[in-house]
Length: 388
Image (cartoon, rainbow, N blue to C red; front, top):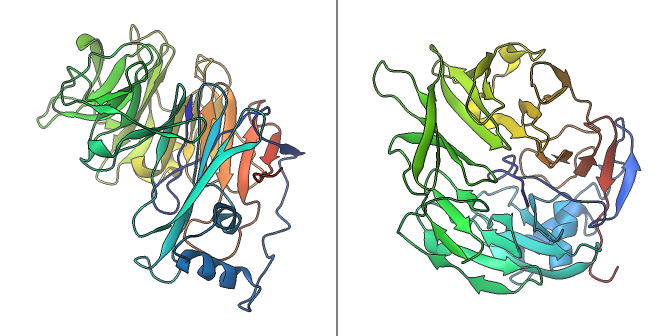
C-alpha cells in the first residue's frame, strides 16, 4: 500500500500510481506544461472565474473541482492497485472563505469507480492506503473521525479502541504524534500502539509491525532510537551528540533518522542501520550538501525504497537517491518540474508539481510524475474522467 503526502498548500501530500492503474504519457526530464497559462485573465471564461464559481457552489461537481485543482493534493493506493486521489480548492483571497474538496477512486484498469465532491469550510480529509481500501486519517485528538472507504467508494465504520495494540505484521501507522494510532486491517481497528515510550517524538512502523521511535531527552543524556514489536522493546541506540532526532523512516531492515542540530533544526546527516538495528553508522557526507538543507525537519523528505536505498531531499527543493542499499553514496535526481513533494512506493518514485500557495493559475509542469528507473526518466499522469 502507498500513502503519500504534500505539505505545500494546506498541509502535505503527494502522489502515487501504477502503469496499470492510470493512463500516462511518457516524458523526458526537461518537459514543460503548455497549459500553465491556459485560461489566463479574469473574464467570464477565465480560470479565475470558474475557480470562484466552483468554490462558491454549495454542491460542486467532482469533475469541476478536479479540473480546477490541476494536481491532486494526495494520492494513496490500496493493495489491489486502486487509487484514491484527493483534491482541494483553497480560497485564494480569503483563507477562511469558501472552498471545495473532492476525491476520486480509480480502479486497477485506470477507470473511475467512484467520486465525490463537497463544499468545504475545514481542511480536507486525508487518507492512507490499506488492504481493501483507504482509511481516513483522524485529525488532532479525534480518533472517532476514522472510517474506511472500500475500493468501490463505500464507507465502513472502524473500531476505535483506547486499549493499546501490540503491533504485528500488517499494522499501519495512520497518525502520529497527536494522536498516535495504528490501523489493523484484519479487524478494522484503530488504536494506539502498545509500549510506546512517553517521550517518543518521532515514529515509523515497518511492514513487520516493528515500531521505531525517537526518545526525546530532557537532560544531558542523548536522544535514543528505540525499536519494539508486540509492545516489547527489541533494542535501542543513542543518537550521537551534538545532534537530536528529526525525521524517521523504516522498511525491510533499514531505518534512518535525520540528525538535526540547533534551534533551527538544521539537518547535518543521517543515522542509519541496514540490518534491523544490529549495527548503526553516521552519514555526514555521501555526496549530499547537508549545509544547503535550510528547511529543517518540516520540509525534509526521507524515504526507504523496497530494496533498502534511501531517498533524501527537501520539499520544493532538490533530492538525492542512494546508489545502492549500502546507502554510502548518493546522486542528485533530475526532475521534469519543480516538485513540491516526492515519495516512493516499492522502488518507484512519485513526484507532484503544484503551486505552494493557493492560486487561480497552473504552474509549469503541474501534475503527477512517475519514475521507475531511479529518476532517469519520468512519465506524467494524464487524468481520466468517469466516462473514459
